[in-house]
Length: 112
Image 1 (cartoon, rainbow, N blue to C red):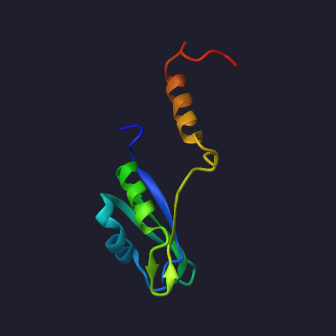
Image 2 (cartoon, rainbow, N blue to C red):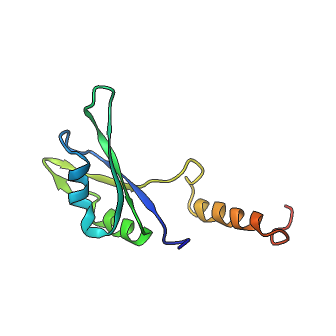
């Protein structure tokens, strides 16, 4: 399930009292949630953002397009794709994956 695998989204501008259960309630209609997380400070209070992880990238894409800009309690949620440090450019994740596959199959990639 390489292309359609687990995909996480950042969710910004959360209402301060929201918990993981609130994230789940709003994001589960789009697919199978693996995790929901509200980031908290050392005082235990919400830092106003969190993450949701979907089993499939297609589900995350639907949630992203539906929930980005969603009005809740006077705030607009900002939803964006969570990417790794090296995945700031389009296609970087696919290139990284191709490199990983190629290193497992000697003789496929030529020295550059």
